[in-house]
Length: 333
Length: 266
Figure (cartoon, rainbow over the protein chains, first blue to last red):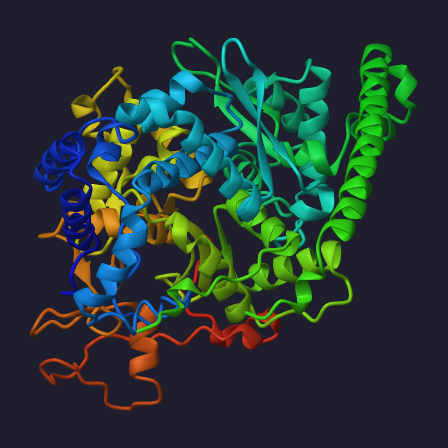
């Protein structure tokens, strides 16, 4: 079995530790190495983090055809001698913060995907730990990586409480979401459910949704000629495709569930479009549902405003980039 | 050796958009990845020639390397479709799931994972998983709730459900292979052909070696007398067909190509 990533990492860390003579760091790493082999039963976020340090640049990986993502010449360095590691070690050691930067980027990416706000306290507790005084430097470097690799900016929104938020420099639209699946005939079913959710104040219980569907002859557990098994479509497929959110009603006992619009529905359609659909079904016009109509109108205004702002932002960035650097396509690899 | 580990690729908004969207989806099949790549070019660089996918990804990975992040390619275990996911190599744990799930839910996943790894077929029955509900850490969870949590795992592409049994989604295999190999070194199964983690596959009844279904398909391709690569005994199982994207596009015309093994779970 090829030398594991972790053992290479430990060896490298020990070499680095020896050179920099930071006893405190050494202590932490030694215990980390000891604990490492026991399957972590601690919180996966904190417990495992302390045990896992980033691997050395030359990674050993199973030589499987499945690994198409060629990591430059890592594989050809496989049998490589410590000589190679020594030279890259030096640059690594000049950079003892590197490990924390890498872990912070991972942490930030997770927070970004979960759409959760971040605080300095959070970052200190989960990632930075014993390197508290170097927090600004670590954060700066992590932010630079986020921007360079992902186009995601980290902005401090509250300098007193040290709260941060993410700003996506790329403008994601409906077009971006329609990538992964073949055409679905479930659109009709989806529109109905979105309409029910909207009508019920943007959140509908499962019972409310089934009540409406039953009226149309669609029943949970009963396979439908067009839609397939409706419960599976609603609670799995459409959720997986991010059109719907399906969650437990908070504090419900026995557990009951509710539906909300998913992020993709919010991007691909709008309250107004759903209302228009609903109106057609009832053979009337959107204004026949006054409170919904008002909400849909507000939603349309906000969307228009957001579109204008985004366009202004991206054209400003485009001109700035065009002025700032030479054409990237001419850079050799 | 002056290493091209230092060869840095160039990141443009094409690559950044690609990464963001790949991250959003968790895992994508190759056809979808190609569509995604073309789409990103269309948005940012209409006139540029679309780079070959493998080079495009290698370019991205060379930039991400210093962050211990990688666009990793895998293959679905049941029908050999290539899939891609953005994988973090700095931490080996199920921390990727930590932001979406509570402590007891993560523990349920670990229990299901253990059952899946220990099983012969690579599947754990719903009943067996739910029976472990009393052993979970954190807040007490009832079986009814646990059923819903399992569905949440399916929705988020961590597990696949097939007739009341659960196995790992290709996303979980890609993201957690390292974690699984380190946490269950004794019970983890490996494929004799590609030497990576095996959850579902075929095994030799004589010597016990195992192979992924797509690995079997490739290894025994047009071999009328398939024999075990290890002990040379007759290979007793049906040889599946290799996934062929061309045939898939003609789907509906010829159903004889589709084996019952295929289930469009991915």
